[in-house]
Length: 388
Image (cartoon, rainbow, N blue to C red; front, side, top):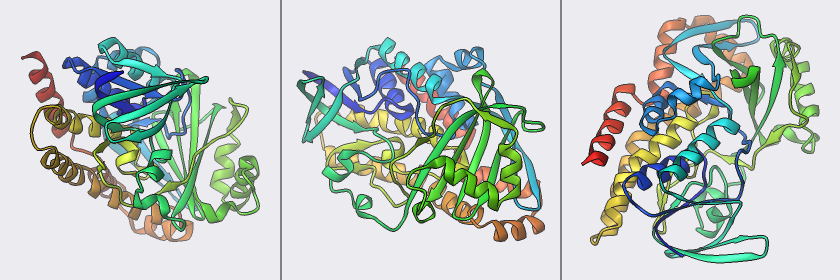
């Protein structure tokens, strides 16, 4: 089976890229091992700098119609202090169950060929093998885009340097809850605990998502029992215990992640264009992961179009690497510094004692996401070029 582009992974980055390219008449294979709808580990906070892309893809009104709540404030809760500031624009709380399905269906409606439920097993230059229930096919493509998330088998197969790291590994965990959240409506809350942190925000359907990140060395003795770990951090941090006491689980089990490794990643590896978390991970505390995934697709799409034409592929790959670094690396560096503070409760308390909420809030937002006007210019440029 031959395509212009094969996209491996149909999360926010992969489906956005597939939709954009199919819109331009490119033949796209969109491969994901899951079928939709499906749940994914995520903070489920959609930053305001992703909203122009929702409008470009035509799903902004549908997300609002499906009840994704507006989020207008950020609240940081430490042991002794609560620090709150307004966001410059409203964000959205939206589950991956809803968001990924909408994006996937949009890509297919635009003309992408769906291979949901198929596992990509190997990459060999411009060919990949996909399999399902004993059946396998070889897919060839002029460009392969990697959108498989934080960790995938191809990271090892492509000998990516970060995959060898054993000392900087964290794990994520999340669960949906129901219950009263007095004062929390319209806000995202961040809670600190030793070597980790939690984010709490409402999503559609009257649900609240509680998602955490913890360094691997804190999990010794719990052996994957997330209920046991949550009990431990509730006993350590009274604000966490108070928060959890408001809710009852709406899901039977926790969802947890493969290792999350905060190390530098190249935006192109052996000719594969990386987007989303496969190209670089921003700390979940920023609430910018889904926005970055979609923005990386928008950044990569015109360069992939050029890579499909005759010419120097090496120069185009270098251009994407440089543009990706300029757009995302400062956010990733700042997110790591903020995460270091948030995962040390005593130091966070001291820092909040001296902080001025609005000034610090503006700096936090400015350093960890794209300027809204910049994303609007990028989306408008794509819209205009697609109508010519």
